[in-house]
Image: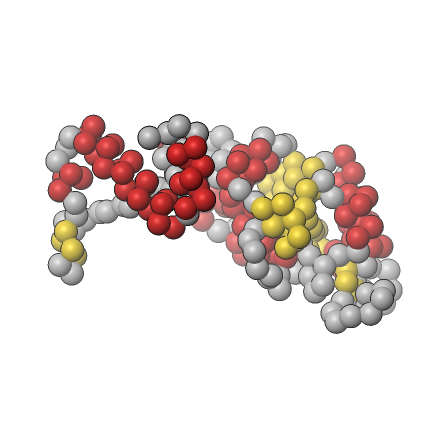
Length: 229
């Protein structure tokens, strides 16, 4: 998969995509990140990419001309194009899995008060919200989406590692323990030391149910409504 990332601050994204698991996936040729600096498409000598909003109000808005040309340079009109913004559809694991099936994704990193609505009308296929809060950096929101998507692409992570993650079966994941068996007076649950795989599976399911009920009652309710017990 190729991620075309349009940004005013490519250095924010570059450090992340050149690190750890993502860099390994890139070296294997599984993913590619094409960083596009929107400022390269500004035509005035100051490389202006923002202006005051019509109708007044605080803040600035990304201008349509340089952003539109940047989008044209990656063929955004023919590719699925994402714009992370507070007013978008809530981002979920199901959406990440859907996006992971694409061969290319274009992602616009907003700034300030956002981008000109005409760009959204002309290019954007998915406005996506990563949470009920506001970020100053569209790059951070874009990286959240990228990280959730690329790890689901075949060859990045072992398939078995994805099977029991949070949200896969509608529940949050159970707690994990490793050595030593006791740390600051807290012992690893006996069932995990027993070697009895069926009992371990039952314990993990129960822990997932309890954690989901406590932290995400909405998910717990949906899980119960679907007839899972």
